[in-house]
Image (cartoon, rainbow, N blue to C red; front, side, top):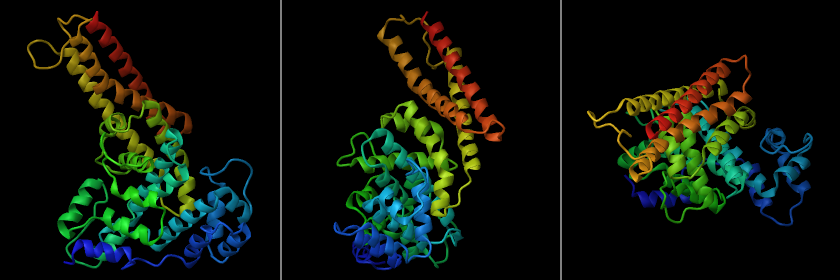
Length: 393
């Protein structure tokens, strides 16, 4: 096996990397020129078969739309902006370089689906937190795991013995790569993005994942991307449960319940339209139902915890408020524990369901399922309030 550090140096020099669209690469060079005109860029874009149509679709999508319809390439360039156009062209070219369906052990369709959700979530987070530019966050989220595709081509493709590459959860994939090959796809992605001349702040996002409260030297856009990764896993990874992501949102990212609900709902609002622009296959209805099912399971867990608390007595080692002075520090700490263990995820789930309910067709199966979640979360919140009053009376 080649020395891992040497392999990364070779990738940074272009080894085994796919050739991007000549039009995209020319756009990268031209858009960096302060003296370039909109007419010059429009002329270059017009030489590509599909880029003009996709650029117009993107400019008219919910991502950029602010007024009337965009009907010309020149208008689209003004709407998107030179720097955005440069990075978007690179991203679209990367998307077109790799296939969509499953090839051997790698499911490209799942890769692009999770990448799109991560991009939309990063954009939504950037808009609400106002710590970085939403369009840059979108692109950074879209290419955050691009190293998977390069890693697969270099190390795995065509070799026997691997039946399926599990893309999620990320930590398990990275560990598998390091054990078998000495490097991981995030390192490969960083080298590849440098070769393709992506902006430095987007390249640096490759270094951060599963961040903690004291992660040093992390940029705002990298933090947004890691938040987006967590919530994209919640949507796309079958084994990922709601309660863990809700805890991460509060403990690591310091997001309140309304923000979490807003970013999830806005993601589903936009995914179908942006998916068509990027030619990514998604099933919004199925993805919503899967996430709502996770919310339902989380409600069951929270309900069980409430039953344990309400039925606890001195014969068991379960938490109880019996005998506590309601004004004592012990009582206050006990109620704070209840708030963190039950109320916060409960409010997050209820808020998400209520906001999602308003965006769905009342005649749809998704709406009816979401309505059940709304009703059940409301009942649990009322029961928790009653329990708190009863225990502290």
